Every structure is written in C-alpha cells, then in structure tokens.
Image 1 (tube, rainbow over the protein chains, first blue to last red):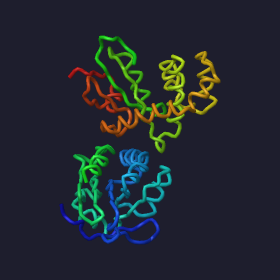
Image 2: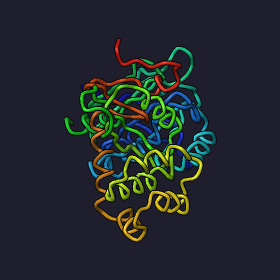
Image 3: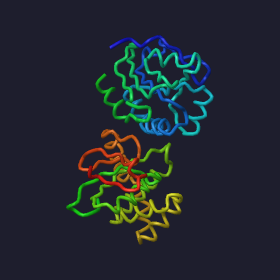
Image 4: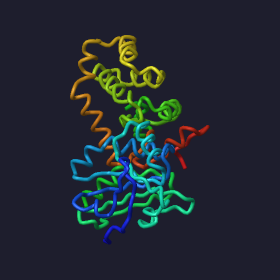
Length: 146
Length: 151
C-alpha cells in the first residue's frame, strides 16, 4: 500500500481538491474517460443508485475526468446525479498521470482508486478497456476488505 | 420463470424502460430457454423503470406477471401511471388491489432484492444475464441478427 500522490483537481465550486483533502475520509476516485459518453453515463448512473450505501459504509465518491468543470456540471445535471465531480483540466491529465491512469490517447483510463482516511491507497482497479464498466460490487468488496 | 422446464436456464437482469432489454426480450421468446426475470432498475437512467417494475410485481401477485411484463416491453414509450392502469384493466386485474400492491413495501423489497443480488453478481448495465450460471453479454447479443448460447 502506497500513499496517494500529490495532486490537484478543480472542484465544481471553483476551488481545488488536493491530497490534504483526503485526510479524515474514506474516498473513492472514479476516473472516467469522457463526460456524456455512453459507458461513463451508465457507470455514473449505476453508482448514483447506490450512493447511499457507499455513504453508509463511510465512503465518499468523486467522478474524475479531464473534462472542464463546466462540462462536468452539465453532464451531472443532464444525468440528474449527485456524485461530485473533479476536473483534471489544467495542466491536463496531471492528476491522472500521478495516479498512473492516463490513457495514451489523452483521457483518463477507466479506473477506481480507494484511499483511506490516512491518505494511503488501499485498493485500485483499472478496467481492461475504457469500454468496460466496473460493477459497483468491486467497490463494495474493496470497502469491506479495507 | 417461463419456458420449457427441460430447457437451459437464462437469468436476465433488465428494466422495462431499457430499449436493449425490449429487443432482447423479443429474441428470447424465439430461443429454447427457460427465462427467469430479475429487476435491475437504475433511477437516473430510466426514471419510469421502478414504477414499471412495481406494476409487474403487483400484476404478479394476481398471477399475471408475464402478461404485464410483455405489455410493458411492448409499449415502452408509455409507462406513466395511466398507462399502467390501462394495462392492468386490459389484463382484467382487480385495480384497487393492483394499486395497493404496487405501492406496497413487499413489492418494493422484492425489486430491491433483485437489484442488490444483481449488483453483488457484478451486473452493471442492462440487459445482463447468466445462462447456466455463466455471464453472457446480452447487450451485445440483443443487437445481433442471430443469437446462440451454444458456443
């Protein structure tokens, strides 16, 4: 298990979300390739359906992509979901690279990273292909094991 | 569950507002399979999937699950309450009982149980399914000209 790397992402409110913001919470970063794309849509809709259960297990989820904050907010609004979004827009993909999930074609690989309240990466998962949708069961299993 | 008892068992996770699921249902009727239907409604994808699932289960309590299932898939553009009542009337259901049942905790728990079991089995999108206990890519299959579960 390794500590989460230093990173900085833009929040929907115009602030930054950084490594220090992980401390004291169990966090799941959901790296997804593109807002509005079909599989990302299905993925966020599915996780939204079980948001309460994640919360009951003490975990908070964030969607992370290289889309701009405005795009992420429009995506979230169109889906009608509540999962907060974090943007890796500028410098593009820097956080994705720090976590080792930047796809050579210029977008986040579909990946899940579970980080404990101490800032240590407890579990991570990278889909075989950006088109694969990891079931929510993977996150629940990881939370249980953590 | 429907289909010949001797046939292979297909467990299908679907929702009534999902167009891929409707296409798959048409294909499944032509295949020699015994089909078990499981609900997998995701609210933000398909806002009427839950009410439709409740209607199917309420019809099931009057012995008409599959008839309601077929009626819902046959007319996916119309899943609002008046359409659900119209289906129930056409099927000759006791409407007062249908109304009470579809809002009942028993029906909600049944749907939630299907969803939770699917989730635990790794279901992430609809339709998803298992034939003889093995996962099958039904979303792909439903778009194909022919589908065969025999490899």
